[in-house]
Image (cartoon, rainbow, N blue to C red; front, side, top):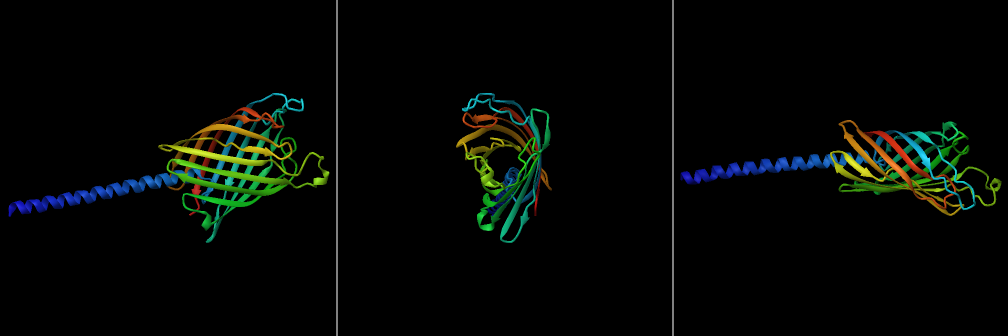
Length: 283
C-alpha cells in the first residue's frame, strides 16, 4: 500500500515537472519567434510601419578610365545626405505604402543642392501579403532638383517590390521605371525620354543578437539609350536594436563598381555609407 502511494506521488511530481518544462519551452520558442519577427520587420522597408531614415554617403574615389567614345569618364557626386520617410496607410483590403526620399548632394566643383525628390506608393492588396513576405506595385513621381547636381525636370513611372523572409535570411527586389516629363521631339535623335531602369536586389543574413550582414544599398542601372549596364556591389554590417515601441537599424556599408566598362556615366570606385533608421509599427 505504502509503495503504491509513493508511486502515485512520484508520478504526480514528474507530471507537474513535465508540464512546467513544456510551458517554459513553449514560452522560450514564443519569445524567440517574436524576436525574429521584430528583427524581420526592422529590416523590411515594405512592412506596415512608420520608418524614418537618415543616411550619409561619401564617394572619395571614382574610376577615371576612358569611355568608348574616347572621352574621360565623368566624376560623380562627392557625397550626399539622405532623408527617407515611409508612412503606411493600412485599409481593410489593401495597404498603401508611400515612400518619400530627399537627397542633398555636393559635386566635385563644390556646388551643392537638393537632388530629384522621389515619391512612390506601393499598393499591397491583402492577397499579396503572405505573412513572411509580400508583393507591391504602384506609381512613382520625381520632382525637379537643383540643376547643378540633378535633373531640372519632372519624371513619372512606377515601382514594384517583392520581399520574403525565411529563417535567418531576408531578401527581395525593388524595380523602378520612369520617364522624363519632356517632349520627346525636343530630344536628340539618339536619346529617348526613358530614364534608366533601376534594379535593386537586397539580401540580408541575421547573425544573432541583432547583428546582420547584407549586400547594401546597391542599385543596378540599365540605360535604354546606350544599351549598357551599371552594377555596383557592396557589403553592409548592421545592428538592430529592438525596443517595445520601435526599433533602430544602425549600419555601415562599403560599395564599389562591379560592372561599369560600357556605362557612359560616372562609376564609383570606393564609397562609404553610414545609416540610422527608426521604425514604429503602424498598429
